[in-house]
Image (cartoon, rainbow, N blue to C red; front, side, top):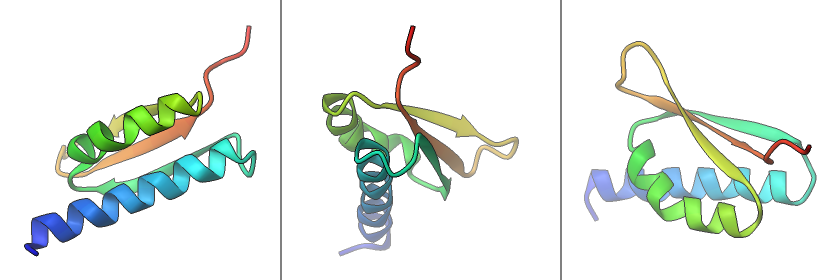
Length: 77
């Protein structure tokens, strides 16, 4: 397994943990910070998050080398 594959697997694991935390009601939202392969990880995790009624938001920093991802519930109206 390459370093890129290991990094992607770890970032997917981190995002899924965040999805599980918010979906379980343990937090209204949470942010996973400093992801290097956020876009690729979000492609895999987003359908799982949406199936649980959650939103993933990419929060790019000024350097655009890393990305934070917020996991939250949609606003209630």
